[in-house]
Image (cartoon, rainbow, N blue to C red; front, top):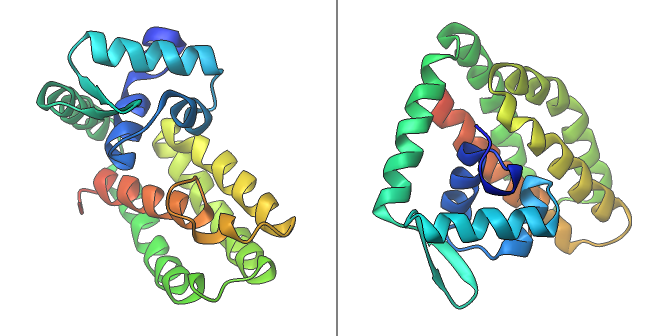
Length: 179
């Protein structure tokens, strides 16, 4: 559903929840929209009482969390349970491998895991289309790691590979009813 700034409201609310506190610029980058669209969506959440602003960042209010849960429930109804269950089961060994790998990861090992996980994330995006943005986030983080910027492996404040992986894990677990 289009929201202020032509942003998908469910993706917006979920991004704010996953990041806990987020500024408009980071939100725009995460959602893959222009800075002005990100700011419009940010402002609209505050104006509608779905988020509260503090120190140039927003977090969801009870109203925002309630709206998010309603929209996630509606989304889950449209997801084929058996298919998402298969994606979930296929993800678990990759997730365990990622957890073991991340602290000592280098560009090559991360790229190899990324290559093997790509089809799984394609399948996940087919069942939950709003999650297709994560493929771009993975690609962007991996490109930065391959360019020698090692902070993009696991830096927590940015959309590093580990941050994106953790968010997609939460998204998949929620879609599969495992959260």
